[in-house]
Length: 471
Image 1 (cartoon, rainbow, N blue to C red):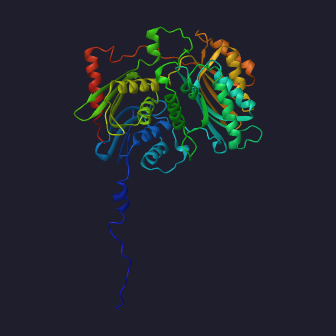
Image 2: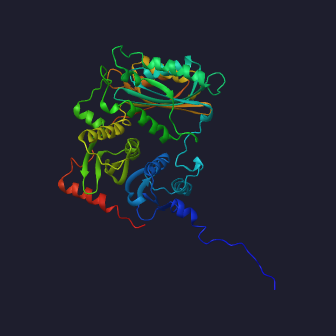
Image 3: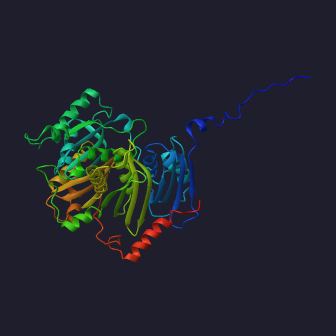
């Protein structure tokens, strides 16, 4: 009788990766429990920064987080998010659902075509990314655009934010004549020239710390894959934080004049209120944020806390009738809570600044034209010559076309005349121009500060009760 031999497989071998790295992340998508939104539940081994990665992935898919419940104690990460698509409906597209499960359940790259709205594919691999920080002034963005053209650079993509008289800008550039990458020696010369532009109004008596805020350097974006929108926005948050925009306008410089009163200024900031309390029993600091709700709000707050080296152990996020309520239980990365009033005040100011940065008053201009050398410089020059200051800009190239979105305000603080803006079209040339108001919503939503006692109680009960959803 012949003996049949077969290889031996250890029955524990299949579970070896799980025993080493922990159980695989489980992502559950539920479209049945609630009528108006999709529930996304994530269970995973916890690690620092995981919450930001999850929120960043959902935000990159243009999903709005209306509610969220987070717990990450004892090394385990459990999240429940209520999400909606761009038009405020459930996520029903199976391609998007599959992408959510892949993006949150693994680190593998997936096709961007499955996203709720695909970002334009830009040829960023052959470009150099540079970042700029400094004091803002009327016309500065136009000066930067003109300087890049004079230096023989082709602007492929650029994103710029201003807040409290500071500017942060990330730009992807290439050689103007050949569209080839810029060599390092020439890149240093470009950085030096742009630094001179940023420091043009820096007084001699200002100290070196102020001068250090006016700088141009290679962009600190993640390497590897082409940068997503949230990666660029996170970098802009980091840049403005580095120049301390949360402290208010720099010395000897004020914001652009506005027509708003103190109460209007509070409304411009989204009625934001941040408070920090101590939970001595558990060793947490409890950060409470109340403000007007808007898209990407959770990304902005979680991003700021993470970049300030704070770990979020528990969180509750809710929105009700246009008002957002967020509560975070945090400790510093070293395990300590916020012990001093100075540290609490700094965290509160940084969170308020993170919320304000994305709130723009004025007019949004969307321009589309065939891309050509100097297009961005020409557009911004016309805006500057007509007394308009760019407070935020997002410029991208899609094939032969350039897509530009600008948020502009009148330098003198007056209302921007929409008919006057449309006349700019004749000065710029052949270009598609769309104009829309982009001011803070002056309708007064019902907020916890304006609710009756009964309404406030109902608001809190709804916030807590929705945390218990059958999965």
